Image (cartoon, rainbow over all chains, first blue to last red; front, top):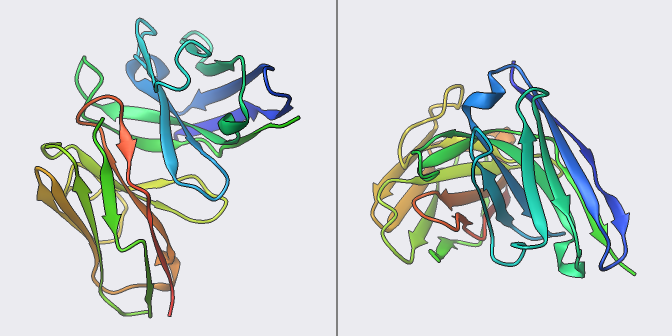
Length: 124
Length: 107
């Protein structure tokens, strides 16, 4: 069955860096886009980034663009999120999710499988 | 950016009740709107996408309707496992956005 297992995360000071990983199994990883979604403590869900199935493109929410980089290794079935220049407001649980369907432009898809989430705390 | 609003923000209900949650988009999202269920400490789960198509394995007591800017999630007969927070989510255009959520709790 489809599994997304996350690792990474932790506590970091403002301005620091963290790298999150998402190991995928149970389907042909290179056929589908992937997303990162986050959730601040006690708050709702927030889309962070989308990477195309082949890694050729990535899109980011405004507040993380230039600080976060999403990448994938299709030979290892792994998705990554490199987070630099972290801010207090980046604190939350980060989820990876499979982006199923959609067009070549990346829209109109759905998030049908999710990782278990990993906690990121940015605090001095 | 497309803003999604949900109402109510919370609803208290009993097992067997019919529960209706609405989601309104600030612009036309066509049918590219999904509904997700999230329980405390857990990842969200896809229920419906697009608009009215039930995801495989989701009980038929869940249904979705609507188009353009107005959408509805209905739980026809609330079950104990349905107490959770529900989010709508649009993938019509970037940046993708979620509604603020509707918490369904025990009356």
